[in-house]
Image (cartoon, rainbow, N blue to C red):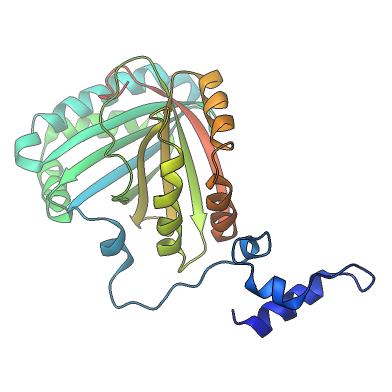
Length: 273
């Protein structure tokens, strides 16, 4: 936005009888409150957003299952067998479970399972062909179908500036904060959060961050790890005392169309606890 347009927008925000700051002060103040209202411009590029934000040939599959309330225990027993079967082909498929959780606050009777495929979509295609012909796999799928109300699958890439989702030792809770962004804003989101994460290192709460490739597009998932809800509260409150965190929030909020969070508890077979 050039100076004249910026001034035009500002003039519409100010009542006629209000005290107005000088034009030069407004236009030359890059770090003031007004600049935080503006979404910074992204320069055109011929390189794909995914290639700019993610530097590894690793695809993540996020499975979200809404479970029948009377079937949660049987569902988890079934899914543990499902994971064991997939891990028996780990060397061949380059696939492993990163984390498995049930929702304790948010969308109840819901489970999330995050898998990692080293080798990209080629490995995913290979896994689909392999398990299509595996009778044990098909039986587990059929049994599980009677226990769930709905399912959703997204293929994701990891933000290169986030931690890699390494397994944590017991006992923790996790928070997944999911954002639906305005189309065309993913690079700007990444730029701001690359800086924003520097203010969230003190308690080692950042677990992993992803953005969608297939499924619901312009979706972002940030996963955080805390000892408990009180630790979450204290950590988040202390972050606001870090100079610069408010700017990250101010620049990224205008990019969001919708957001929600869920508190997660690891399943007994989740690699990260």
